[in-house]
Image (cartoon, rainbow, N blue to C red; front, side, top):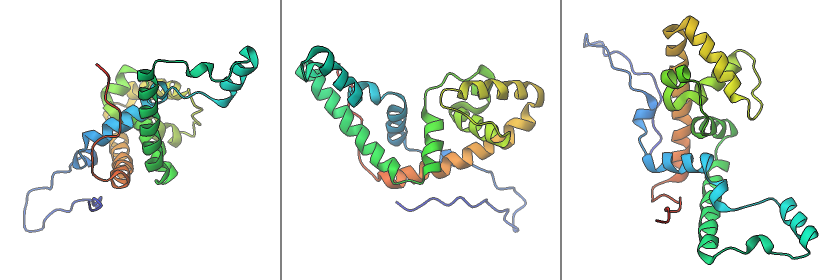
Length: 199
């Protein structure tokens, strides 16, 4: 798959009709890749059943029985293994990307309950728009404080409206398009690696 072009379209001098700008994310439709990223950033740790070494060591020290955490039905262990393998494959793809691209994808796919006005203005790009806006206002976003920046942005939206939304949405769309395009290239073609839900 060739890399998409992100050049601005030019007006054809022989035509009086303006070129219609298309959002970058619409040029890169891939619901399988989006599903993988949504699962990875939103759900992957829970189904994989992975826990830190600290928890395992504390369990052994407390009970004297190693492996107590693994006493689960075989079907649960298989599902946890499948989830861990899928998460590792996606992590490997993300690790091949420049770090800022991973940050953009994380911002786009982490499930955060953005304020209504922010979600209404920016949709699925809310996290990207909030981070761009916060960066422009020199606000450092500590992990877990993204919602606070979303509230600040919501207050600015009430004052500035479309004059704030249009350029911020355009910038969020552009950086998301580049990052998502890079993930698509790293991913290649093929089915999703995300385990299917057990019915």
